[in-house]
Length: 500
Image (cartoon, rainbow, N blue to C red):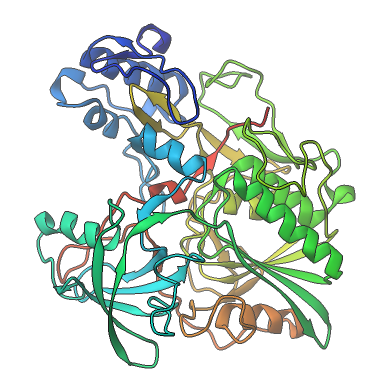
C-alpha cells in the first residue's frame, strides 16, 4: 500500500551536519517535510503492532512531522477503559542520546510523585539523587527530603495555581526545569507539617539507577533490599550487577526488589536482573521474553528483518557498544546469581514496562513473585527507538510474552487482596506508598509489609493505594486542569535494543 520506509529515511527538511555526541556522522540528506511524514507513515505500516488499526490520514494536513506522528496510532481501548496505546511519543534525538549515555539533564535531582495532578495538587518528593541540589544540605537540612510537599516555587502557587490549560507549560517548567544554573526558591511542607523556604540552583543531573541497598537481619534469616529505579541508561547494567553481587556475598535468604518508581528501560538488563534472581538451573533453556509483532511480520522481526528470536535470561555482562565505567566488570563475565525461587517486588502505578517484564519473565519459569504495593502500569509492549531527521520516535512494535506465552497484562499486575476488577492478580498485598520513611527503612510501609508477608503470609489492614504517578502524567481533574508533562514519558519503556 505504501512505499518502503527506506525510500524516505533520512530525507530531511533541515538536515543536520557533523556528528552526534556519540561520534556518529549524521545520515541526513536534503529532503522535505513531506518526505519526513511519508517515512513515518511507511515505518508505522511496517513495524507498528496494531498497524491495521491506524486510520490513514493525509499527511499534508499536519504542520509538522511530530504532529502527524501523534495520530499514527490505534484508538482502541482496553476492557478497563484505558487507551490501548498510551505510550506513543517522540523527543529530540539529542535528549535521547544525553540520557542514554548518562550525561546530565537539567533538574533539581528530585523525583516528584504526583498524587493529585489537578488543583488542589498534591506533589511530593519521591526520592532525590545523590550529590544533587535537592539532596545537598543547606545549613544542615536536606532541601527536598522524601515526602516533602511542594507548595510554591518562585512564589507561584503549585497547589491551587495554574488553573487554565494555557498555564500548564509554565507549571511544567517550574517542576521540570529545562535549563541549568537557574535559582529557584521553594516553599515546602515536610512530613511533620513544618514549612520551609530555601533556594537551590538547577543543575545537570545524572540519574543513579540503583539508589540504595540494604541487608536486613530478621528472625527468619537475612533479606536483601535493592531500590532499582531504572533499567536505563547503559550504566544500569553495571549498578544492578554490583548490587546483586553484594547480595550474593551477603548470602541473603530472600530479596526485596523495589521497583515502585522503575518505569522500565533496556529489556536486556531486565533479562539479566531476572537471571540474577532465579539462577542458572531455573533459567537454563528457557526464554525470558518472546516477541509478538504485527500480523504482517510472519516469522521475522519487522524492525530489522532478522529472525524473530526471543530474549534469553542473559547470564553475562553485555556489550551495548559503549565502554564499561567500572573495572570491577568485563564484557562476557558471568553474572552473580541468588538462586531464589521467590522474590518480593514493591510496586506502584509507576512500575512499568521492563519492570513488568521481570515479573512476567520470572512467573514464566515458576519463580513466585509476591507483589507489595499497587497495581503496575500495564505495559506488555515495547519498541526500538528510531531516529529520523533529529527526532527520535517511539511506536509500539511488539508485545512481550514469557516462557509460557503469557502476555495479557495490559491492565497490570495486581496484588491478590485488591478489589480491582481488571488486571492479573498475583500473590501479595495492597499497600499505599509511604512518604514518611526513607526508602530501605524496614519500617517503611511497603518494605515492612514485604518483611511481614515473608514471615507469616499475611497482609496489613487493606489500604487503598493512591494512584501515584512519578514524574509522569495524571488524568483529568474536575477541579481544574491536571498536570501533564512529557518530560519523563521515557521512564515507561521496554527498549528492545540488543547487545552487540
